[in-house]
Image 1 (tube, one colour):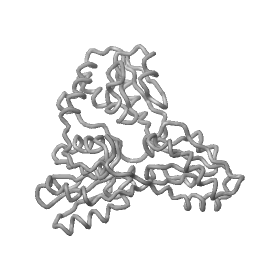
Image 2 (cartoon, rainbow, N blue to C red):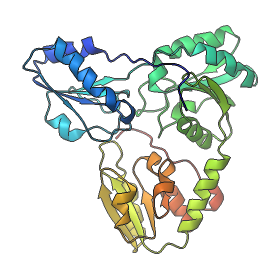
Image 3 (cartoon, helix red, strand yellow):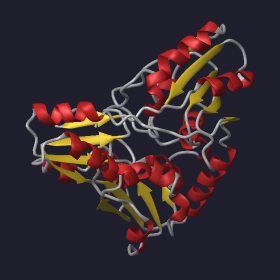
Amino acid sequence: MSLKHDREWDYELERIVEEVEDRDAKRVGLQFPEGLKRRGPAVADDLRERCDDDVTFMLSGQPCYGACDLDTYLMRRTDVFVHFGHSPMKESDKIIYVPLFSNVDPFPILEDSLAELDGDEVGLVTTAQHMNRFEDMCDWLEERGYDVHTRRGDDRLTFEGQVLGCNYASADIDADQVLYVGGGKFHPLGLAMEHPDKKVVIADPVNNVVTIADTEKFMKQRYASVHKAMDAEKWGVIFCTKIGQGRMEIAEKIIEDNDNAYLITMDEVTPDRLRNFDMDAFVNTGCPRITTDDGPRFHKPMLTPQEYRIAVGDEPLDSLEFDTFHGTW
């Protein structure tokens, strides 16, 4: 889908330069999420112009899908490490987080979304990119007579009202409907699955569209994967070594309870890497999006830990829930 509005980002170059100078840094690492890697060289050029000639800037080529996805190899070899596109999750004096706040005006799409709201109580959530306007959005709704419910979910979240692709605790509020302001379908679908009692209205300010989160198709895909795995004999249990995605206790529990389960450690979980393993099905204890976004790409069923318990008969089929991370690392 082509964007209805052009997006520009605030790379906070002056703040980065000030940190580099204050720390007398000579080696600076820059990490961008997948969708913004192409802008990395231009940002590096802008920083070179502002810094001394003896400062070296290095771009991370490692995949990056969230603040839990830090390039620890590059981080250990730099004086300053700049992570773009996400809010802080792992605090460190070496890491500079640049959330890349969006310049898109959210209020026209908020106006359109009012037609989908029932009653005058609503929860408000958004992603890190729109957090710079969150208080303004709350005020805007309140001025129009809405009782706006917000909260900060848990320690994995930086801001009040923030949601991640793996954490929707900020939507645990006393309102029967939640207004999600942001792009994409993954976040609101996860939110709707974790809070099935709430109506989730999606106000996308980039594509200028208002929709209602519908989990039916998504749930059918997940039930199909569980059914395919019910006859599995050999299970590959994936432990992701990325710094913010490890759930070893869950992986070890599965291994202890199933003699035909084998622990597989890896940093980047891809279909090609798993194809060489002779398994009937896999359990992903890493990022939930590996299962939900990429699940159909794998040659064998890829389940979440809870879906695994359903497939082996430990839990009923109708107990299926969205896989989430809570707490910190």
